Image (cartoon, rainbow, N blue to C red; front, side, top):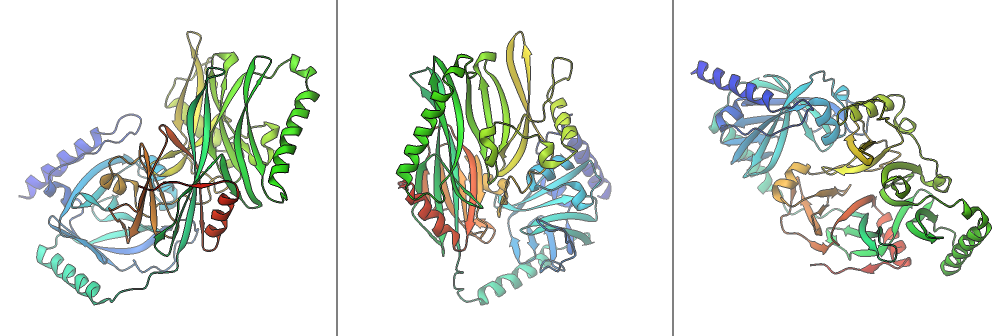
Length: 505
């Protein structure tokens, strides 16, 4: 019997290794339940907190430390959580890629030197339950809401009777609790969307931008509002971010503006002054227009507290598409920053490494570390680079992931209370998700809707609170969260600048 199990594990290991290609891409491998559970079967104990997200202190006390986890083919217990209908999935992943893009941390934070690790996902009635990163037969890591914990195997096998006894105890404890008064929670999110449209006058693409406001207060979803343009909350007040299409002397080009709204006594007068100043600027440089602005179309890719990323389409160079990131305060200077300005000296190596993963580098291909942005991936903002090249005089580009975590200067809050994989199991049409800092609601973006769900513990309440229809081809370019007293302030700011209530389905 032992020989049979050993052969099964050996075959599984060979298959797992074979499903990783040369670029570190991952494919799931689902095998028989007995072979799956054998990797983690038995009794485990949470022995330490390895890494707390957002903190350099890792020896803090935690309620999880000392808790036990029991894994059996027919039942699982993890602390106070359990399932009587588990199933298992195993996949082998490249350690650095998986930790950076799924958990926004690095192997160094966990003291890992393994190039590849096994990821074991436990499902409860085909819904996400937990995920273990297994190093060897005796050691695994598990992620909970505040960080990574180390699990050590204490017993190789447990009986179903023992696991069910644990479950009976937990069920009794939960039934003994009376009703709990809801906490005084208040949280809200500003979501910025870009929608591509068509400029019929110039027969060119153009882009429109909208901001949606979603707020949950004491478990109750409020009205959902929408306004034109992007309303950006910053430390010094609110700003409006917008795109302007200019047509002059048969030349069409775009400008991106970021305008502060604070200290404006008269918003109408401000808009008149803005228009007057712009006309005056055009007249002042009328003679200079003989040399003409380049015909460059621009669209916004990302907006954060202090930075804006833009895609430029140079019509005079065969629609060459490049990325630039600017400091909001210096946007009018049109001087893009480099990746190294944000993440330090390792930037150029990381950028070049990513570029080499998608294209062969030669004299015709020159990487430029200004050619980057932030983009959404599996519920997180991630760094993406772009490399431009020509093929038979045609302007082309390829994009690649940059293996670095976006700095807090670009993204202030970017966490998920429920893993993306768990949401995808429950909502197959999910394209993106945003999780409240108070863990009270989840915003799910599908191909055609914004769907809001309440969060109960670690699960989604499967009945949505509201659904709002989105214009086709909508793309998220901004997400800004507020809590405590600030959501009411942000909501009032939306209303002050013309937001309208949208219909909820």
